[in-house]
Length: 460
Image (cartoon, rainbow, N blue to C red; front, side, top):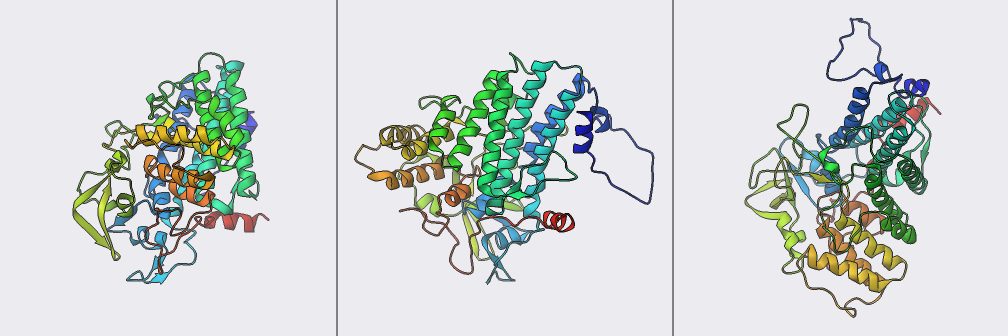
């Protein structure tokens, strides 16, 4: 297993200049965890896995902003980076009057690929290190395997969300010889298999993990409770596969609860006052003037039902900002402070998954109950009657609307529209996408990164 870890981490750099190595007292060297890592080192690796996922959001191309822009949930009016509101919305040129056919495969917004690939690598390193360590027993190693495989699956899912029809690599055990790209369908099969294997690992992991989890996992920090999180992710993946029965089976083993807290679920935590930590990148000071201002197209407000309390997620600015012939009159206010956590998955999403899965299995009565739980409890709206929706198509339209407002600016809208083949100017009755008329253009994916293309050319 030590050899496996060495293979995983064998990326090295060369230089004409040789200097003595300086050990960072705050970060263990890769070699030091390859064989018989200490408990402290294993704990640090666990922290690193969680931190790597957080860094996928806290960078200059934050995930929710990228996919939110592509799905027309938000427009980032950046004073020093016009590609946010030009290229990502299909335009180029000094006045934004030239349509873009293909996105840049080496632009800053493709940095997400590296960020989420890092999550998977951190997970594999932790798993291999634990297997080669004598300080954890078989049960504890099983717990680490379940934890890391869950995170590796989550890493792949983020990458697939960004790459769409390009597909992703799933065979990554040897970073010197990664597997070829597979189709989206094949990738989802692999992700689900990895989640299922993780679930089995967790079942054999005993009563406690051998490493600490952050406060974001309160209520999900034992192998038994972490399995519920794993099954929640499996339900999401099953929905993406249109395996509706499988989604319902996974939900039954998750923390889905139609009457339970909508906010229940594991979270990414932020602490801007803690060394080596960061604040929530999606928080912005109300009516502030940041360089990158996240604005919200007005149709989010005008197309909402009267009285929907989820409109509190946006607010009218006192001073609109105009860039590239786009005027942002509304701004995002989903996250109230730099310390606000970011949900990885929560019960509100699980109820919406259940609703869609029940439609897919013909249980419209059950679907309506889930829809109404969201309407009344999340939106403060009246419940719909049994005769309000006629047929599966209208149920899906309603679910798509509820997902739009419940999961706003959380990385779902673009993926939802794409998987339902509705990524167009009018995805459903009463629902539109802003900025779609020429020269604007909608994209179904980011481009495969230039480095990946060059690797495949050099390694046919």
